[in-house]
Length: 324
Image (cartoon, rainbow, N blue to C red; front, side):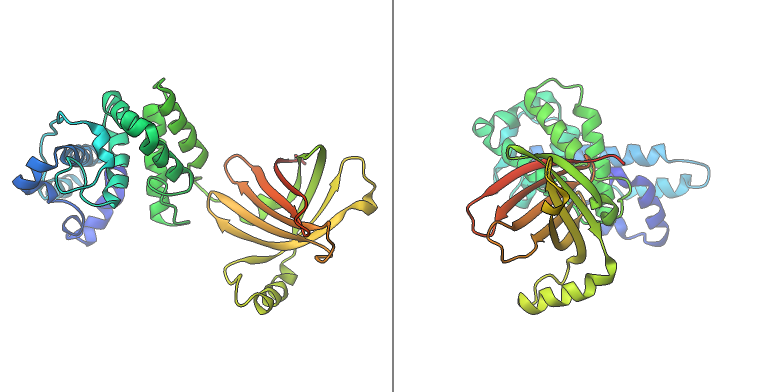
């Protein structure tokens, strides 16, 4: 909520129960406060951050409304506990942080937002960095902080949090923190999503084994429905969420045009990446094969694999779009 104060003010005008429906009030239990010092510190920090965010939005028109919102928030002064912050990755009834596995995601995200270097160092060193590295992998795969739900408010919330973390931790010179910042930058959702067809269309070029490949991708909407219907018919109902009509051809540097290999397939839109699957034609030729490609919308780079139909040759590669 501290990252969506403006939206909260507008929602509250029509729904005064919004705060009760969310997590406010968890800090009022004295028993819980005594046993979950770490979690409650993060909670209190977030409540105070929300109050600050609301106060920064004050003006003559909303002053009374913001006072009413703040009056309903259970706000305590944050007290930094003397606990090992590596225990954030543990879950049990007596843990100073969470009791249930999902709590780890929430507390990890909150710690990055509200804790300092001392606490983060304790988290990093826990179990020889194993748990820390697992969290970084989760961010790379769209979990934890990066809870992607394309074209929703959830994605915008994640973008704001990730940008805040990039700004907060970029000056820190701890190597593990620099790796976190790098992963956040690579996976930061875009403000506006570009049409996936525009993302994949064009000529992509780069090393392919010991050769240089030129992969040209186009899209033909007129054949999409027929291609999709045939794919569903022959593959037991698969592909209902995929977008057919993708056409491609590939050729290596130095080859004559008649050596170009055509391919066709589909794309799937996944927010950070547009995934493309291509089958070279004819699909029965043993040295033709299948491309599986991912285009990163932020870096505009294509990562992929290709494997021949006879399974005797496989390539991994990275391509860049040729500027027109």
